[in-house]
Every structure is written in C-alpha cells, then in structure tokens.
Length: 309
Length: 125
Image (cartoon, rainbow over all chains, first blue to last red; front, top):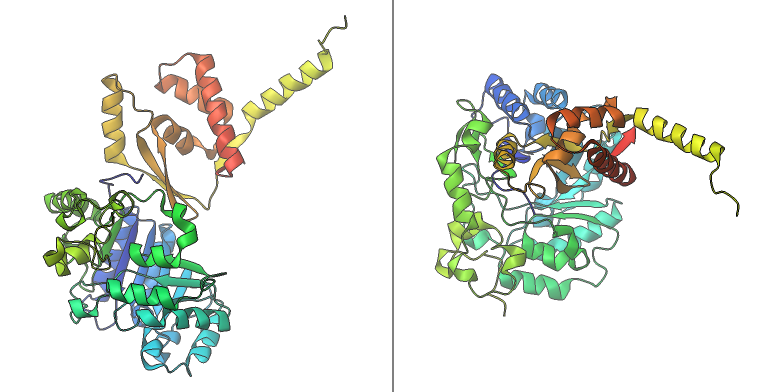
C-alpha cells in the first residue's frame, strides 16, 4: 500500500511552453524547487523542447538526479533543439494530432529525426472521447514503427487546458465500444503505461497484480502538476491550485491545509461508489475528473458506468 | 563413529564469515529512493512510546516503476549502504542506535541484507 501524506510528490508533470507566462529565470526557479523537493520523475509537456531555458532546466534536473520524461509533437520547431546527450530518460511523441486527421505522412520522418539524435521514442496519446476509438490504430502504428512503449496519460484540466469540457471525456460507452474492437492479442509485446484505471483494466487484463500496491488516487500525494505559470496543483486533473512555486517550496505547499483537505476529500468514499464491490480495487478512480465533471453521478469516475455488484 | 568436526571446513566457514562482515555494501544505483522525514519523525515518536512500528514505512524506493517502502530499521540499513560500510559496520552503527541484543541484531541485519542482495537491490561494492 502506498504511503499517504508524503512529504512531497514523487512524480510531477510540468506544462512548459515557450509561449507560457514563465520567464526563463522563473522557469529555473521552478526547476530548482522540484530538485530541492526530492521529486523522482518529471514529465515535461506542452512544447518543452522549444522553451529557450530547456537546456538549463535539464541540466538542473540531471544535477539533482531527477529523471525526465519529455513529450513533443514532432514539429520542426521542437526537433531542431533535440540533440544527442540531452539528459532525457524517455521521449514520447504525441500522436494525437496525426490520429485526429488520419494523416501519418510525417510520422516516419519525425521518428527518424528523433532516432537520429540517439533517442528511442515512445508514442503518447491523451485519451479523449474523440480519439479513444483509435487506440487499436495506435497499437498498429507502434508495431509498424517498432515502438514498444506507449503512454496513455491522465486528462489534464489545469488552467492551460481551457478547452476541455465534459463532452471531451472518455465515457463508459466509449470503453465498451473499445473493448469490442480490441483484438485478443492487441497489446501483446507492447509496454503500456496507462494512467486511468478503467482504461488500464480494459487494456491490461493480464497485469492485474501490477497495481497491487495501488492505494487510490494519488493526486496531492505522490502526484503533482505544475502549470505554465509555475503554480502547483494536486495533479493535472484537479482544478484547484495549491500555490506558486515562485513564492513557496514544494514541501511548504505539500504541508498546507489546502493539500491536507484535498487528501481527506480523496480518502472519503464518493457517494456514487457506495455498495460497489470493486471499490477496494479502484478506490473511486480519478477523483479530480469526478469532482469536476461528474457530481451528478455522486462524483464517480467519469469512465465508470455504475457501481458493480 | 567418525567425528563430524572438520577443522579445515570450520576454518573456511570462519574466514567466509569474516569476509562477509568486511565486504562493503552498495545500493543499486538504478533504484531511486528517499527518506520521508515527517513519517520518520512520527515513527520514532511511536517507537519511543513503546508501539510496534515494524510495519510502518519511512523510506520509499521505486523499483521497476513500483513503489516499495522500508520500515525504520530497514530504512536505516538502506541509508547506510553507501559503498563505504560493510555488514560489520552496519551492525556496529545500529547497535548504538537501537537497544537490541547484539546477536539478535546481527542475525536480523544479516538476514535483511541477504534478502536485499538476492533481490539485486544491494550489491557488494
């Protein structure tokens, strides 16, 4: 079972873009804060490669022993900054744009550019209502391009993702439909990292014990998120910020009454989950999305159809 | 009836035991870990109050993406395995910190270290 009320998060996602409001010196302050907090892993999203301070940020992380996952969309503006020896543990290419248009003409070239710089890319897709049916296509793409790693992260709703509405979320019906479309060996040979529990249940049925240590939603515990302004959130799916890393340390914000209240809220059984026999497995799933979008169903995870008996 | 006492074998075992005690222990560098300070302070307080804290974790390790935790004594042993200390050094250090029979402590520490060596979490430096 995961330890609750950790001193600081273990994994942070950070939306880092050149068009973001953070100045370069402020971005370095945030990077220092994350190292000082003893965070283990940081996932840089947005367009981090095109951020002018990226080399200095990565140098700070490497010096602090912090391991970096980096997401890019494979644009020329990003790829020109990619070079061998960049201290990045894993680079993911976000394929949402090409899956949306079914245009994969540039994918091979992007992968070749990334590989030429010495990186072994994975593919990433943020699951949404309008793309979840294309997950089998994603698996085909991985096989065609000999890419074993796939990451399906959680749905971000922080201040920089203003366009997301409930209509954009994956629904239980979407999952049922996906389940019918998936071939029995669809994920064979692939290394999947799936954040959302109900999607994971569907895609990784033979890895049930890999979540045996799971103790429920990790927002404001082992997970945290930094938005484009340097504000710290419980996770990217939780809409309430804890404070700015320009003014406070991670440890101070993780010890704040707001953070403790959020953990108490997460620990309480959602009204919509009462009586469910699988509550001890999912612990209510994604509490951030449930809290924001699914109050009319007792704050059940939006991907959960109903309590199971 | 032949005696089972074999001076050479016994001598070999003693030498092996001494060598084991002297070998430096090093944490697997692929494992990321940290001490949870707030949790550790709570556990120390509970220990001082006479509570059983053996199942309470204070050190977190991430191994192959999975989170593991070590209790107070396990965490102390883990923290001390910096490549500069041997099993004998660990026992000495822990004997100062914890009020336990020396033989019992040595046996427990040795068993724990053996387990971590077998898992590949520790190696001989």
